[in-house]
Image 1 (cartoon, one colour):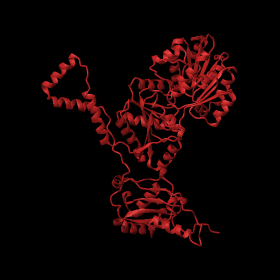
Image 2: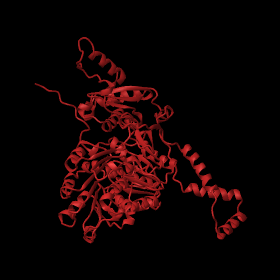
Image 3: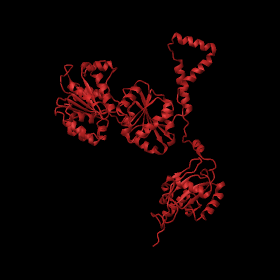
Image 4: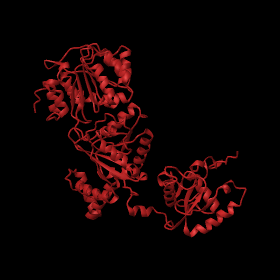
Length: 596
């Protein structure tokens, strides 16, 4: 394949790297109208942007298909994170390998003295992060006087991360005649202002289609119970068995916890977050490239710029904060024409928010449930048969050992042992709670199909909380915590359930303890509720909307509507007393009546 619009040395590098055609953004920056001009390029993550700006600046770096002479850098590429800067360097190294261009990478976390020595020896292209580049510039080790092209990669992210001052100081030190190539997945207002200040007659190029989800990424949304999220992650990893997968969490603590959980379950997993040193991050990425690890748990910033050719599965363990974060996370897969899958784990209460996010991002996701153990075992069976029936080359020693085995075991037993050995190496799938009617029925505690509602005269206004109310009910009613059902805390009242079979005994015990003036808790009135919380809310709403009280909340102690009832608590069916925090003090305080 020939690339007529590209310098010969770069065309040979592309061909040698397996390129048969240019991606849309790469073709756009090499068109005649784009040559020599400042560019504002909007392109999806994973669309080949790094090679694109490598091709775009070729006219400034090469003369007669040879590298122009310069004792100071001719091109400067700035990226928001260390990983992305290192990825840019690797891409430019193979692209410009035949030109003899020296490329120096300057990023935080690496030896700055070594970087300065490399800069002093001369470099045609410098790639780095804003903070480290600014440091070299202020120390007089980075000379930008001969610069012909400057590239800002992921410019929107750099501004979000607070690098505006660093970028402005670096750009102010560049000569006026240089080209400025601005690459960004989105174009918010701060990017527009930056372009207006540092670019002249810039050409806008956009390869972002109406459907913002990358065409090579299949989006799936999996609704799960909040307590099932970790189990769903395990089952997704087992179901897909991706060559490489990345799991996104919101905080470094969550990364640490999920990493430990997956290690315990037998996955080969590494972690990437802000608490890891540069050496640890490099080792983690190398383990993924060497296939010594197959799963990476990371935060958004730590995973920025990661490019792993074998990455085919992205799992959003925690919901992205916005559509742009969703796009950047998912863009780690489905790159260079390869297919990928992005899965969002959606707790049931947050489904509406995710649906709005997907709709705003113009992404169509297939909704479903997490894989069940049965589905995983079916997948395992197919993969195992395919793997074991595939032809393999064996040594003479292998055949000799096989003969010994067949002398002492039947062929069926040998095959069964082989299957068992393969299955033993696989982490076991998890049983999920689910949200089907059958699952909800299974979660119902026995004995609570027929209950009596009681109420007590404390609520949120008295700082009541379920963890303090439950021990009070146990002591006043002489019952265990297993005998208390739902607890609903309203503004000034609390409703709770007692099984009908124990209701009379509970009421008598409460009446006896109410006569004990030595107990502070005896001042809390507990009685049978005349109706359920739902009925009480309905009556209160009708009274409020009546002709005399329309628009006003009537006086009294009735509960508010269900939308305002606050907490609904279902105690866990386990034994043991739930003490107050700190072991002392009152669990809540009734407001004293004013007397004036």
